[in-house]
Length: 262
Image 1 (cartoon, rainbow, N blue to C red):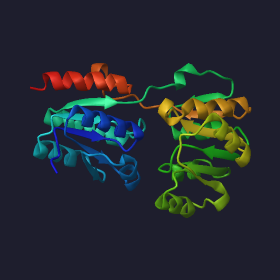
Image 2 (cartoon, rainbow, N blue to C red; image 1 turned 45 degrees about the vertical axis):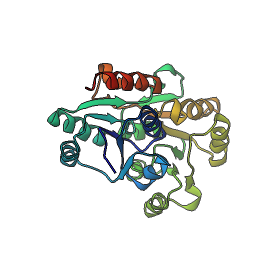
Image 3 (cartoon, one colour; image 1 turned 90 degrees about the horizontal axis):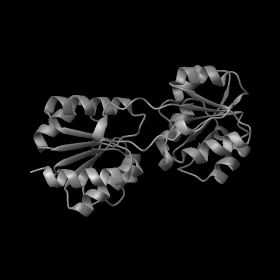
Image 4 (spheres, rainbow, N blue to C red; image 1 turned 45 degrees about the horizontal axis):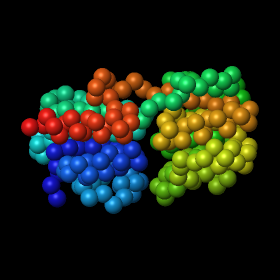
C-alpha cells in the first residue's frame, strides 16, 4: 500500500477523525501508532496504518524514503518524547509539521480543592497532604513513578482494559480491588459513581480536553468535596498557524494545504 504524502502520528480518537477527514478529501496518508491499543483505536480506516514506536532517526528515514510532504503530530498532549522526535525529524528533513492538540480546558476552572501542578513529583507532594486512597486517571505509563512517589498511599489505577496494561499493574503490586480497567471518556454521573465506589480521598488526572472528558472528570470530583490534582500540559513545540486545536481548524488547514501543495 502506498504510504501517501501525509504522515499522521497518534493513537487517539482525535487522530482517527483527522484520518477520516483525509479520506473524505481524497488525500493518501499513513497513520503511525505506537501500540496495539492505538492500532485497535484506528478501526477500519482505509489509509495505511503502521504500529510501533519510531525514534527520531527512524522518522527521518521514513520521511525521506516515502517522500512525505506533510506531518501531523496528533499524539497525546503529554507524549513529550514523541513530539520532540517528530519536531526534530521534520526540522532536519524540511518537512512541513502541524501539531493537532485538543483545546485545553484546565485554565477555565478555579476551585479551592483544585490543584494544578507541572509534573508527577509536585503532584505527589500535594497528594501527601490528603487521605490514603489516591485515584490515578493518568494512564499506565507512569504507574511506577506514582508507586515510588507515594509509597505510603493506597493507589487506585484507572487504566485501559488491555492485557499487558493489567499485567503491568499486577507487576507493580496493584491488587484486583485497586485496578479499574475501563475505556473512557465517561459521563459526569459515571465518574461520580466511580469516586464513591472506590472511596477516593484525592483524584489525580491530566488536562485531557473535552474529547477526553476533562470537565466530566473534574467537576463531580470537586462537587463531592474530593481534592483534584491536575498535571498541566507541556508547552507545544509547534506554535502559530500550525498549532491546530479543533477538527474545524484542521479542516481549514487541510483545504489550504490541498490548494497550495503544488
